[in-house]
Amino acid sequence: MSAPAASQFTVPPRHVVITGASSGIGAALARYYARSGTRLSLLARDAARLESVAQGCRSSGAVVETRTGDVTDAAAMEDWLLACDARAPIDLLFANAGIGGGAGESLARRV
Ligand SMILES: NC(=O)c1ccc[n+]([C@@H]2O[C@H](COP(=O)([O-])OP(=O)(O)OC[C@H]3O[C@@H](n4cnc5c(N)ncnc54)[C@H](OP(=O)(O)O)[C@@H]3O)[C@@H](O)[C@H]2O)c1
Image (cartoon, rainbow, N blue to C red):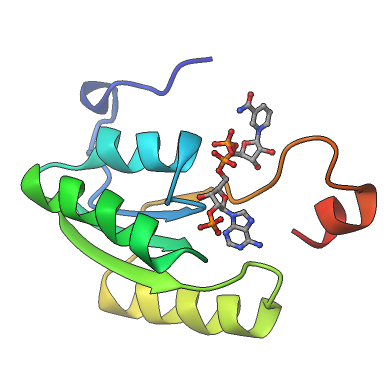
């Protein structure tokens, strides 16, 4: 399934939150939604890779805030999401952070 084109939203999302935004699908989503008038809140563990994605999105006109963190830390995630929503109401959230097969069921369940 492909992501809906921005034009398909009656009101384009103004604040998009993406976990696992430092690579793969999350980074692609960040680049897809990056445009003038859009705020992106991006999270992953690798600060350098996350900042690289963020810089590209800023070049496309988006306002981007990054957070280095681990989604298995539930309390930190709650704090972060509440802070994101307080800055600007969240329109769209991609809980994308994850790991592929072979990592083990216990780790996969935690993430
Ligand atoms: N690609 C596929 O064909 C496919 C198919 C089915 C499902 N999926 C799911 O789609 C999601 C993204 O897949 P992908 O292929 O884009 O994977 P990817 O390239 O490995 O990207 C995973 C992202 O999640 C972040 N991440 C991983 N564990 C994290 C944690 N504990 N806390 C915070 N961030 C974490 C990684 O960044 P850091 O390492 O910087 O934290 C990275 O940005 C995953 O949930 C995957 O299981 C993918």
